[in-house]
Length: 194
Image (cartoon, rainbow, N blue to C red; front, top):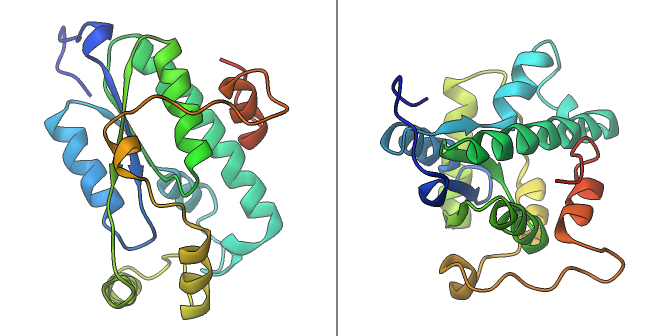
């Protein structure tokens, strides 16, 4: 959080979208930005582990937990956008595997007059498995991930291109949606149209 009395002008405020697969170092980078940019860091995994702390480490895969994760993320996006609109930098540490997710949040940030920056943390297969294994060894209760999970997720992940990383023009909203905000409120059911 910002020091007392220190508020950036909205034009200088940035919403950082942390993008990457599990084990890429997203939360580590988000924590660094939280300090260096005096930002509010919002990490859904922190909330899920706090709320559902009694879950078995594989229960997060259930349909119920996936739906709850989407709802938690929606509320965190709403809070993050409100906070950014009031002049505080925000780090959304979600992973953002899909380009449409990133485009929607870039568009919403733009509509609020704040900057959105996509920060992508690539990781190769071998290093990813090493980090995830080390994390589960040192921090029991972490979400368990099989090699099959990691392979499937890598196939689903849409790597940001150089134009997106530079903050290029936001793509047109997908067919069937009036705005990116409408798209986002369907993606994250608890997120109102902003």
